[in-house]
Every structure is written in C-alpha cells, then in structure tokens.
Length: 125
Image 1 (tube, rainbow, N blue to C red):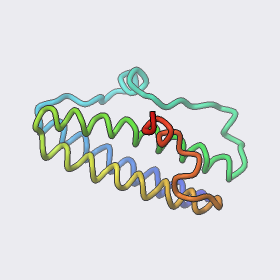
Image 2: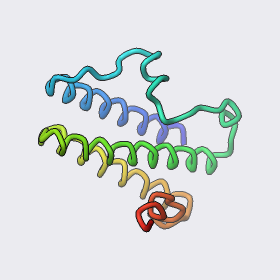
Image 3: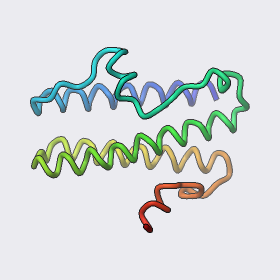
C-alpha cells in the first residue's frame, strides 16, 4: 500500500504544479504557502487515521479525491465563465484523472466505481 500511496501523492504533486503553472499563465496567483493552503483547503486531516487499516485509508483517499473532484468541477465552470479554454482543458483532464483514481481505488476495496458517491445524490436534486 505504501508504494501506491506514494505514487498517488507524487501524481497529485505533479498535477498541482501543472495547475499552478496554468493559473500563473492565465494571470492568476495560486496559493503557494502552507497558510494559504490551510485557509482554502476543503480537506481535513485527522491524526486518528495515521494508524487506520489499509481499507479505511483507501476510503479516506477516495473521499478526498471526491472532494477535490467536486471542487474541480466548480473550477471548470469558473474557467468556462472566464472563457479560459486552456485552464478549462487542464481542469477537465485533472478531473478525468481523479475519476480514474477513484474508480481504481473503489475496485481495490471491492466496490463499484460510483458506489457511495454522494455527488450523485446532489445531482438528482
């Protein structure tokens, strides 16, 4: 599991760098300090999870990816409103990568790709 978690971490780091570069190119100023990340983050960390079972860790990662995906969908809409096609394309590719990782992690714990996805319930409202 450690190797897979490290792979996901490194993959996300590359995405965050790519997104930051795209934002800078578009004239925006992305968060770049720990204080800014903590201020704007929708994710939380709980020390209790440090020694969780592997399946629980995977479920936590899935939830974090889903939260990130939901925020990314909002960012895609903002990029569309700003007619920033390059940023929109980058965000769509990032969202697709998140969807793939969610699907793979769901399969790892024996669940369907969209099982337990609360975003689906929100879309039906």
